[in-house]
Image (cartoon, rainbow, N blue to C red; front, top):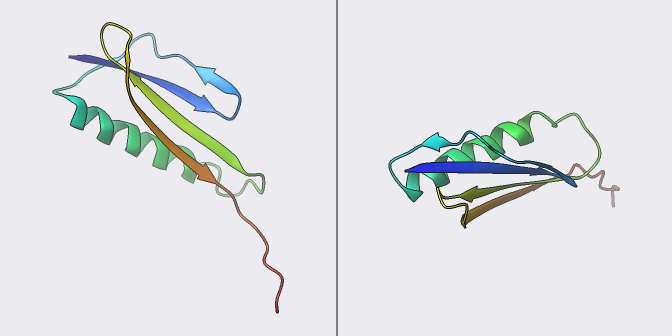
Length: 79
């Protein structure tokens, strides 16, 4: 089955028009989780909080899965 991975980066949406042929929803979940981890590692030096999400759609365009991650670095004052 073909799955499409729409990427939400803050307020930006990148819609997947190509998709990926996978065996099932478990493999789609794994692909979404790996992609989110890569996105978070790419902003590790950005001090601003960031929210990322990947919404997975099936061949009919129906949303079937959403994976989300928030990334923030905060300075904690010494007590």
